[in-house]
Amino acid sequence: MAFLLRQAAVGELRNNIDLREDLAILGEEVEGVIHPELMKRWGIAPPRLASRKARIVAPVLAAFAVVSIIAYYAINASGWLVLTAFAAEAAFAFHYRKPVREVTSLVDQPTKDLKILALVLARLEQEQFKSEKLRGLRAALETEHKPPSVQIAWLARLIELLDSRLNMGFAPIGAVLLWTTQLAFAMEAWRRRCGPAVGRWLDAVGELEALCALAGYAYEHPGDPFPEIAENGTCFEGAELRHPLLPGARSVANSVHLNGNLQLLVVSGSNMSGKSTLLRTVGINAVLALAGAPVRARHLRLSVLRIGATIRVMDSLQAGTSRFYAEIQRLRDIMELTKGPTPVLFLLDEILHGTNSHDRAVGAEAVVRGLVSRGAIGLVTTHDLALAQVAKVLGAKAANVHFQDHLENGKMVFDYRLRPGVVQKSNALELMRAVGLEV
Image (tube, rainbow, N blue to C red; front, side):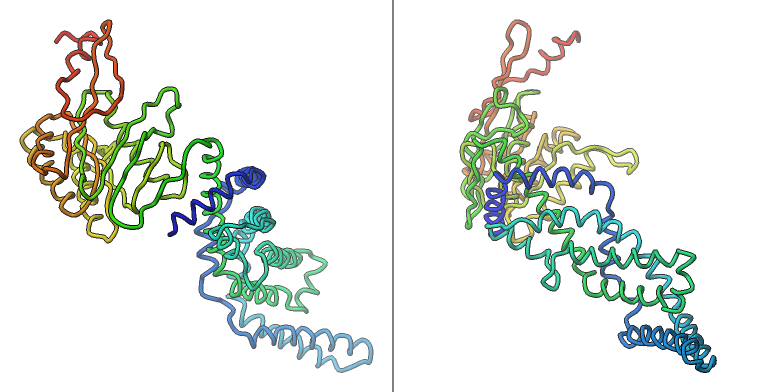
């Protein structure tokens, strides 16, 4: 499985500090300088000088011109021979003037970008990887059994030779040698040979950098285990999950177990009690797991899942959409995900709270029942205790859990621990009074 291959790659890169540090330094030079999409388009664009015969004719004409000039001065050969050679060269150059101009004008920016990318590629070429994933990425860099840094160096050399045409002293010689035309053919031959590989180089470097980032996280958190990826069924079974962005001293571990038998947890609780953070904790650990990284948990076992969430859904003045409309569009997208072959993990935060209580209860129940009936698993948070009835409707496939709080010395205190059942009280009035509102 791809996830296991990435796990092995992250495990290998975790202790390769030199490579990760070198790529981090080189990456600062590359970031914001190269233009990946431009490079890819340039690499796969249709050839402008595709004729192999013409590429042979160009040096033949140049050689004929040089020989005719030497013969004219050395053995007093006919000047008509020189004129004929010049006329043939002029006709050839005039015929290919437009594609030659296009080639020489379009190659400059991609070559600059490739020369910068070559710094990263050259560093990667020094590595001999052991894991299958990294060996595959390393092999993707090879083109015609040559490393990309060598291939790019040859293109850079062609550009340097092309720039010599700007030297006024060399210009007459360049005209006789069909210098610009021949180099344009050579650069197009390079692009025909290596251009399709440019996208592959960029993708390989990007994936290696992503794996290095995950390896850096793994190195800095040696206590975080790699998850177990279940090959069959649908499950997310996390023991003592924590949010990786919260300091260990502040975070509170909670366990979440979802599978084919228990597909839904309805999470109730008061404001700031930890409901949304729980969704983020589940979501980010699932993303880390499926990316091949360690997870912030004592243990996590999950199947391959697609993740759909309605966390921090926002309205848009520019698009003319309310938060409620943006949310139902997102819910529609999550429903669409369930039509695919991969099971869905849904994380719905304060579902449909932008509408009235009646429509919210009816709509939320319909959405959740639809997701569960399609084999999805997930969590739904709510302030509306009426939505807790959804768990009763679904029977054994759903359960209510909650966070609770208490008032201590005029302040709300939370322990952020997940408990079974429905929350029995709300802290909204206490919070309003705590900030000075008379309610």
